[in-house]
Image (cartoon, rainbow, N blue to C red; front, side, top):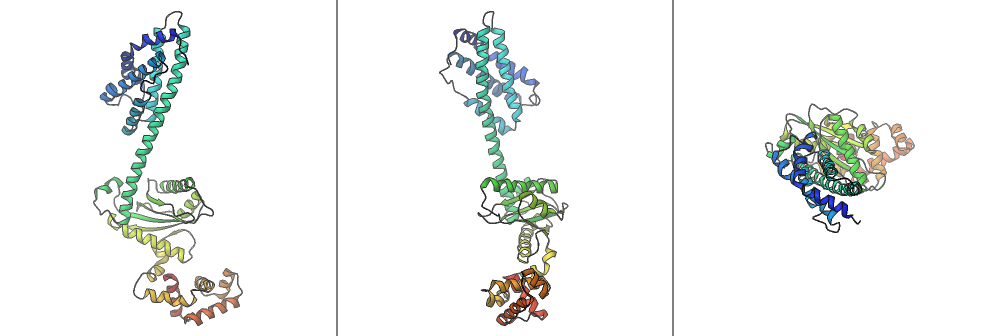
Amino acid sequence: MPVSAAARALALRCERRAGELARRMAHESFEALPGYAELPADVKDLEIAGTARHGVRLFLRRVADPRSGHGGYRLFRERAAQRAEEGMPLHLLLRTHALGMYVLWQALREEAGPGEEAALVELVDLLLQHHHGVVGAVAETYLDERSAIEAERRAQRRAVVRGLLDGMLPPGHASLDRLSLEGPLLVLAIDIGRPCAPEGPVVVRRRLRRIQTVLDKTFGTEVLTLLDAGPEGAADSGRAVVPADCEPPEDLSQRLSTACGREVRVAAVPAGDLGAVPEAARTATEVLRIARACGLPAGTHRLDDVLLEFHLSRPGPSGDRIAALLDPVGDRPELVETLRTHLEHRQDRRATAAALGLHPNTVDNRLAKIAQRTGLDLSSPRGTALALAALLLR
């Protein structure tokens, strides 16, 4: 847009005052902003004053020659990235730019003489347009830098938590200091059920954030978590470490299920110290697997809830042989399911039939086929124990 000769002349007179205006901004005007006084003197004297001087000259030179770029917003972006890295609040950074524009407007008004009212209005219009571009560049760069810093911090924190849970970082490792963990701990294993339909990455990230939010609110602290989305159509999973005095509430599973809209199971296992965390994490994962395999309803599971099943499912030389006892019915899933349901219902044929939607005689026929094929005597305590162990091991 063409600029009038009168507006260019007024801008030229103000350009001679660029250094003075920059000092006024950095050492007088900005001092009224909350938090500005705490900034280091060299930041004010060199970087902020230099950026203010650049901003004044950039605008006034663009008025003199609208076709020239004069460096664009590169310096503003560089300084915004620095302020983001140093932790300056975004509102303070944007207020300095807004107040700087106001100081420049005051200078233009002071320089304007009688008959230059139209030129002053023209410059104010251009100044507002210029400020719009500067604020956009500064805010965009600041937020991008903060996002990158936070992503790096989360990645580092996640790597440390993974190292702790997997036993890759021994107690006393320097990286563990940043986690601020002391005393007895509690390790959680989390299983988030399969989705009903395919989900996009945004939905997955939102669900994992909700899980994190519920855990933080429940335990009153920023919970250390590793939450991972499973392959498409598979269940998500996670692990977490919390102080041992934060005993999980009985309805934790329900809270998580409500937050993410999917069935959630949780296993909780105590760890006496940091060195015990990896074993506790492995135990919690196994408790979760066994609770699911045994058909327990979703909830908050502990080792005592599946103590016998946990013991029976431990690997050993006899494990494969016990699991193989059910190989003869391995090709008949309805027989395996009948056996599992029959044991879950305390070998009550009518309750088993009701659970499976079958006639009791059908249950009897299936149990007879199981006994015939496997040789297991389900009417004896030993046969029942072997069948239970075989189901767990399989």
